[in-house]
Image (cartoon, rainbow, N blue to C red; front, side, top):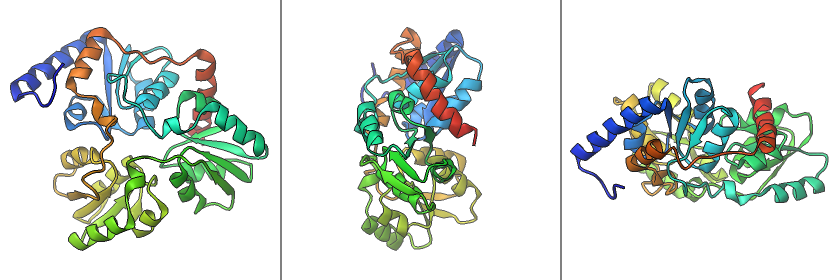
Length: 309
């Protein structure tokens, strides 16, 4: 295992071995937008969690190496039951996904039997299986508005729930979960970033607190942020999401200048995967992520109801 920055020659050799094993294993390498730059560079696809899982389900391959966190690999396993799904860093978890359990959700549902449960994809497969429909940060508003019930239990991200509530007449009951990266942003940080970069457009993720969203010029998912930077006529942007996205923005929009809203906006779990983890995963085809059939079937139903919108 490589620790703390291999030399350029070592990196090239590791990359070459990854490509060789990828071909041998008939594998697909997926990397989330928040992954290390070195991991994004060797991936077949870089994107957000559901985007990656959907793409992998359509791609030819026997093995999915998912460079992300646990719930993402679970979603890939749910949508690609015929493929072997590997999570290179087995301890790469999502703290927000761990902020709700199926039993807690069922108890809340028993107290609001008239409500629909809208479940953010940033949850475990078990929680998805206990929900009516999934949503992403990009389509949360449309999903909330699509359910026939007038009351919605929205889990687990309170900030995304509050954002969706702005655009619906339904009663939205937010779960008290949050992203440990996005929830730390403050309105004062936005104001200071605007002072330093007065011509920059402020883009923030909807997992941010309401007061941060109020200060932003645009609110978008990771894919939405990338699309906005790519298509906008503006030349400078303040990016209010995990700093890993800046690597992709620099590659895809080299003529634009993107500044992090905070240089400390780092998801330590996303950064647990490095090239050595990917190489080990391809060598051993471990650690494998599986979801029991009953849970997978119910979770798949919640995802497919969202995709059918």
